[in-house]
Image 1 (cartoon, rainbow, N blue to C red):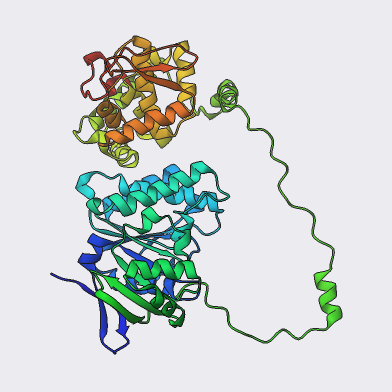
Image 2 (spheres, rainbow, N blue to C red):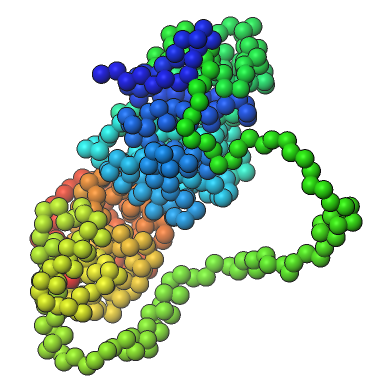
Length: 503
């Protein structure tokens, strides 16, 4: 079945339709100077296609958050989340097929690039089973795929440009159809723009942008000046999803509007010059600027200090004395309940929140009542279980330093680090990528490799390969090292297999 999206009308008055299935396969580039109607065009496209396909919008100015009111898009405020959180949000959005708007408003250029790259990375890296068709709209694409280096750091630029390149060059096979809009073609990285097969070119005044637009549309250079004559909302269209020959069309109306409307003239307020002088030149309020930043503290030392102070606080939370026998009996029942939860074949790939809900229900059935661990304690137990830690090892003095170092990492990485640390302490072969991914709760081998790279960047481990291509991981300062292990291997030695019983 062919799904045609009505974008507006041609200059001849005929309906201008876009083939949605063809668009998903061939991608789209929109170009036009400020005020040409790019955002209006994107809004029309998103509204018309919303009932048919999942959408994700990278929104640097918060223009598209109003889609949530009419079409049920989930608005994600990027400044409220970490890069890791946005990566996971991108993955979950694809898994559950929820249309989203990533609102980057309020962030500086570098943080916009980093968070957009993380979110796009999450969309891109999901497993093959979840490669559903999806429109990914990036407004002001020149901010995320700049042609030349700007004022942002090289790292942020590489992350953002890499994510945009993946979207436009490799996204099609993963069901991702990139739709990028830019004010200046000359500022957009050529390898990103070149992957689009459909074009909608709006009003443009600079010669270099007109020349590139004419080249992309197959027009002669002398025809390039016609882009200056386009009215607001008029675009030249070309591409398999639009028209086989350059076609001028006018974009139709939309059901929603941007929060920031076009500025309109209005009369100045009536006030005397002296009144305004008193208001404008009044003494400024007290300086509320932030104090000058101090050098970053040593996080490991802070964690050690917090841990040393913890015993002074814990006794205050004790409600009533409990005998050692009762404590041991409770712990055994809790451990038995955790083993039952982790016995499910897919337990390693389920979200922590889902596992905790099942754990709480089972604990209540066991009659544990107030003895049910809270979510934070459950995370700790789960981390130890996936790392295969026994009570004797967890209480070992040398292992306390490992636990302290693991706490520097995000919660979902700590179990992987402890699993590797245990292998290093015992001299076992380094776990393979499949085992690391499984401990992390993923099927992606690339993600396992990135986890090791991240831990190495944090100064926790050093990875190296021996002459046979086998991997050795050494823990920094502790001088524990794993035996050489095949990165492509899957099975772990029997004594190294994580077990809920050891939690």
